[in-house]
Amino acid sequence: MTSLSEKGDGVLDVDTAQKPASSAPNPERKLATDQSHLPRKTGADAALQMLQETGSLDQTSDPERDRRLIRRIDTHVMPLICIVYFLQYIDKSAISYASVTGINESVGLKGNEFNWVASIFFFGQLAFEFPTIRLIQLFPLAKYASVNITLWGITLACLAACKNYAGLLACRFFLGVLEAAVVPAWVLFTSQWYTKEEQAFRVGIWFSTCGVAQMFGGFFAYGVATHVGRDPNAALKGWQIIFLFLGLLTTVVGIAFWFIMPDSPAVAGFLDKEQKRLHLERIRHNEQGIGSQAFKWDQVKEALRDTMTWLYAFWIFAANVPNSIATSFGNILVKGMGYSNEDSLLLVTPLGAWEIVALIGLTYGAMKTKQRLYFCIAGHIPAIIGAILMATTERVPALIGYYTSGGIPIGWTTILGLQSSNVAGSTKKITVACIGTIAYTIGNIISPQTFQARDAPRYLPAKISICIIYFLITVDLFIMRYVLDKRNKKRDQEKVAQGDAYKPEENHEFLDLTDLENREFRYEL
Image (cartoon, rainbow, N blue to C red; front, side):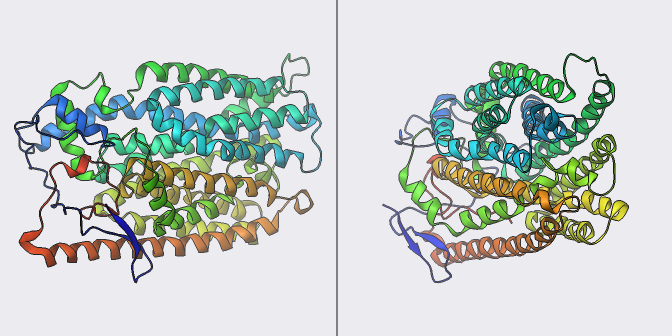
């Protein structure tokens, strides 16, 4: 049995005296020729069973062959992952476009009622986060995601039929319930398809679709506002067309997701038996496998006691308190700088362009240098400057500050990437992702409430709070790097101290061990 203990440095660690240690990962290591002797470990990762079924891989590393396999995975997996993440962002942000295309007047929203329509989405997400982590693990991943995508598309379309405040609250609540699965599921998809070195850039790619959504949503809403909003005889209001179009589009994509997206590499139709074996060996050094359906309470307890869980959670919570500047209140904030309703729909779009450039550029640099947290901190610097500009200036300088504040999503992609590559153990990974999503929802529940009607049009108290928060989450990143680096150095020292006695357990990578249980595990920085 593995016992948990708190080390002198205040970081939770694992006593591995009774567990065989592991050897360093070797990309050229060969699998045993005869796999029939491999144990059927209860609760082991699905990769171990897949290894037993596919047989041996008696080949050394071939970079060109690996590149072909990565390209094949990218072309079959990444497009659909990106499309759905694009939709989840624009769907939950549609309420912002509705705010300047007539929803307040049509439904009769007063005072801070719009704030609660924006916030209640995250109450729904929070309420269903714990159930969804078990359902993600219990059911086939892609199939479960498909059902949620399809149902949230239908719910979004139903918003077009809302006639009162209560109806908007109900639909937005259930929209949050159905989108609760997205972040945990996308972290799992990334970890089962890509190596640690590849994950940060892939997370950056699919997360950058938020920037694409920001641009597309602004142009789309502007077109609706100018061509429908100015027509007094239009059968539908502009905000109703926005909800209907996006809702029906999401529903179609959700249905397609069921048939196209594989639940795991083990059942991927676009990979033959040989390619599956190659993929197993490729991700072996992740020390994570591809997932286990066994729910392990000891991994839940470890996640709750792990220092890193709460460092991740603090960043996610704090960074999302200002999130309304890009979602629910983006257009309102730009209007407060002195621009018209229609102008605000166009002027928010450069924020999306900045996000795309910053996200892809910095995550690519992080992948090449293997310095994720330093590149993330670099992305925070223009965001802090932008927050100060928003709080202290007006019109053009304030607008520039609004755009550069969009660098904070770089941190979000870094945290998601770290959760994907630095958290091992199927149940622990889902638990940490769940806690992160809960922190995300609480931050977003608070976010619209920082923009009080009495503070319009400048919302100065909210802007000052953003400056303080951006500084605190940057400090949090430095602490994360210190903790992870200290753990890696300690494990390296343990290995050196044991010398020749350091012997690995066969196929330990696929035994569903946590990052604290597996002393061979090394954290990405």
